[in-house]
Length: 218
Figure (cartoon, rainbow, N blue to C red):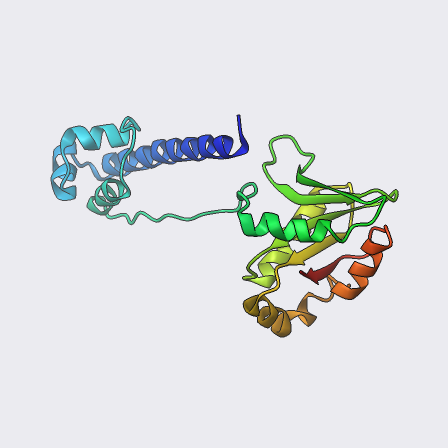
């Protein structure tokens, strides 16, 4: 099974579990209020059979609209939130970025891509693991910088859970947006990523893994 198929299957399972959990909450709220299915269904603008199947998690592909209508009829408000879980699929831009990084490496260095964290059931992965001179460093590629503090926290959590290395090289795509973000926030990232690109490039071209974390723009 490809990684994309596996992610799609995990997403389908997430949806199924969310529907089942939502149905349980709807039923519990309806019973606590002493309301019949007929009354709630009428207020929600859905049929009694739809409401019954929602409560039992039996609608294969329920819409958010159906769930939200039923929730409002019970004095509830449905919300949808997302939480980090695993690594996203990589686009062509990020793959090209990692390719540019790889071209900086001199022997004996090598880059192994898509390296899962060594924890059972943990879906997160590093974009790469740099090794070859007896030491190792993790590599993370960013084509579009967003919340730099959130980025630093994600890296710190990965380092906490992966004992194989304590150095991370953040590889950032060269763009006007990214240059502006780094110009504004580079010093706030100095503690977790002390090395700048020139120092990182020198080490890589000499066939050495950098001994400290840093940021390189390519």
